[in-house]
Amino acid sequence: MIETYKGEFFDISHISERTNAALRVPRPKVHRLPNGSANWDKLASDFPDYMFRISRQVSSILPEEDTTDIMGLWTHEEYQDSWIDVLSRYDTFNKLRGDKPKSYLHVINYGHDLYRFSGNGAYSLTFTEGLSGWFNEKIFHSMLKPSEAEELLGHMHSMDWHTGKKPIPDFKTASDPQIISRLIKMTDSISKKDKGKPAHPEEYFQPGGLFDRWKTSQIARKRFPLYIQIEENGVKKIKVISLEEYAELDEFLIRDAYSFTENLTGKSMHDLWKQVVEVQAQKQR
Image (cartoon, rainbow, N blue to C red; front, side, top):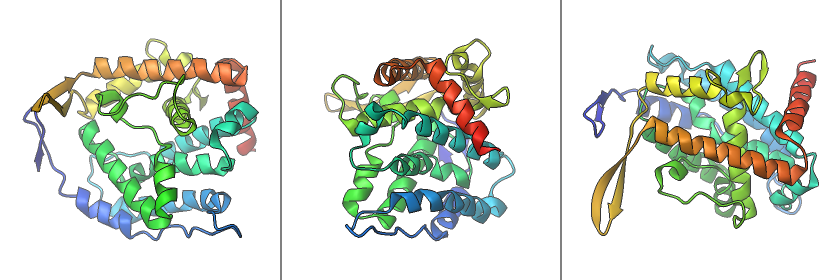
């Protein structure tokens, strides 16, 4: 059992068991190109099977209250892949990834949600995100060269932006990897099914829409408020972050990325969304 700062207890006896089970699943082999760099196309192609193998490995030991919808989670991955495919039609976006292929972004996409394929129970958001980050570091450092792993992990967005542990990258001054992390945060947030197709960027925030439903789900999963340990003038304190505070910053991060994306591509989010819907429809034909 673990106790939160507000005195609640969570049974995590199965966490180490399922984490160890997930760690035992053989990783995809990282093939190398003649110049020694990772073959990201091959890795992106092999990664989905790895994610589903993790799910199958841990399914028998998950507690009954863990109701993770694996196929729904995979739909989320597909939608995010479609957003990456559409944004990659624009040279201004492609320049952000330097000499890396588009498939590099797909690996980042899959990696961010990797641990969720081993379950997604009702625990503190800081606990689940912290465990997910640790798992990602463990996996990618075991697969890639140290410099490759650090570079890839540096492209992932972080909940530490919301807690204040890390500064939010400003689009005006951010490095290209930081900009990518902001844009992938945006696509990660809105890559959800609504009315049978990818969520519309603006409808996402409508009253009763997906954003409101996300907030309701966080309450049901007992993920708020967050209790973050910080240090001020050498004194350790507990910072409390309410769901309302977290959601307000989350909406800013997403809408700010909308504006940047529209300026970057010269297209409205609505126009980009229409392309995403078409790409997704083509995948299903």
